[in-house]
Amino acid sequence: MADNEVERLTQAISLTQKLRTSVTRVFSDLSDGYHISQGNEKASLNVLQKALLTVNDNYSDLEKLVPNLNSVNITAPNSALVGIDPVYDKTPIYSQITHAHKWTNKVHKLADYASAILSPNQLKRTHQGGQPLAIKRQRKTPHAHAIPPQGVDQCISALERLWSDMPITLSRPMGNCAVLQITLSRTLRALIVLRGLLIESVIVKAYSEDFLTPEGKVDLWSRSRYQVFNKVTDMVTAATLHFCHPQMPDLSLRSFLVWFNSYKTLFSAPCQKCGKHLQGAFPPVWRELRTATPQHDGCRQT
Amino acid sequence: MMGVVCVYAYNIPEGKSGQQVVDSLQKQMDIIGATKTGNFCVDCETYQSHPQNAQQRSIHILHNSEQPATCFSVLDSGTVLVSDMLFDLIMNTMTQAKSGREGFFQQRKGFKIESRGQRYELADFVIKIGSVSLMANFKGVLIEVEYCPSQVPGDCWNLMKEILQSIVGNTADTPPSYIKTKMDSLYTPADTINQYLEHFNAFRKTATPGQQNR
Ligand SMILES: [Zn+2]
Image (cartoon, rainbow over all chains, first blue to last red; front, side, top):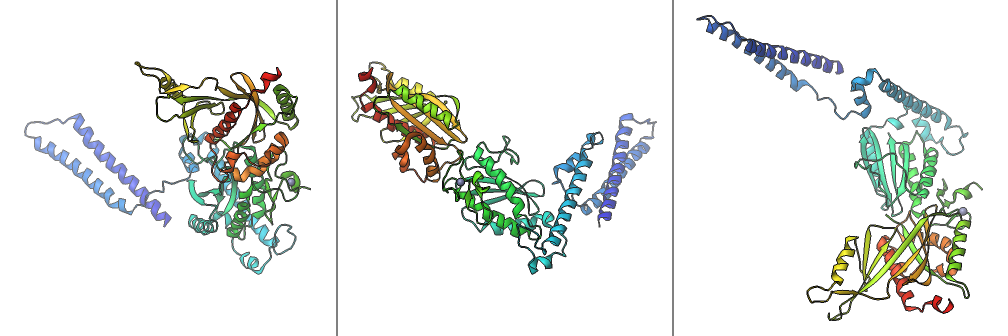
């Protein structure tokens, strides 16, 4: 089917070239002028008419072919645009990106296989995998990082209904990857970049801040103006590894969000270990992974 | 953008001067590890509508160096108008007599009051230690503590209480009276202005302590 497509495209290109030639001929003949001897006007007009008819034929040929062409997908990712750039020949960036992309996919895949093999064995400290469900699924090709956008949309809209104090909006400012923007109560805002259903990165900011660049686009990189939220960002990023479970990507995202929801008490809850609110001018920025109880960064290690 | 602010008057112990109190507070800021980040000033002038008007009204004009381009006008009812500095010019015009008629407002003499001092930062806290003076007479000390990341007083009051108590002692056992009514709303710069005005009005009523001592 793809071959067919390419064939039609090549045909369309050659037809366009033909049309161009015939049109060029008409105009060059006209601009060069004709040698018209007496009584020969008719013959000259015939030549012109013939040329115009060729144009007409070429044009209708092309017109017939066009409806069979699918429009080229314009919503190509930015990396594809790099490929179109003529400077590409001088910089190896595009091939490097493609290479890196292939490798991350491979790493994800192998990691998923590894986790599938490991999960029946109770070597893992953080997860109690190995349930029959996990075994049944382990033969499947890993897919957590390659779930199609519709699947992600469905999963997110199901998750969204779980919390009334945590609205989630989904957007795709850079192609396929979904970006979730979460407002947690009146405490904080978070931006989560997904790859399939795997969490790629999390940034936490204040309720009074936003995730927009000065040009009004989604800002995926800048950090909060406040130290406390940068600490929380680090903590949450570390925790995403704990919640990552490639065999059950929807469940792992869900349990991450359940845990993350406990940050709504960031300013109001005292530390469960020392009973105080402040430690070195910071509130309890850590939430215990299983119980989600608030703890100071300094208290959790003791 | 701003966080939640609590302003407290510091109880000056018997036999201590204002300067001594400010010095010891500044020393304490060094101990808790706060860094100096410049000076600050909150000032207030009060105008009264001309007696020829049926109802005598007051209007307080305040400026806060934290919002340097803003002018706050507060009515006795507590309503705050937040505007840019041009409002000062309008007020100026309204106090001037024009074509035989007296101005709409007149400045109350001896009412200019301000709190001025050092600004400190400690992680996401901003702490300000201000000496209050009424017409250049020392009246007392105001402590302002702001917790910038939060906007809901009810959320962060207990957290602020811990740092406030280490500075002003048990005065901070309860939130400032103005904040008590705002625990569940989003805090705005106008709320800070109202807190300062409450303190300024209280200071204006007290006798000047420095005058007897010095
Ligand atoms: Zn603690």
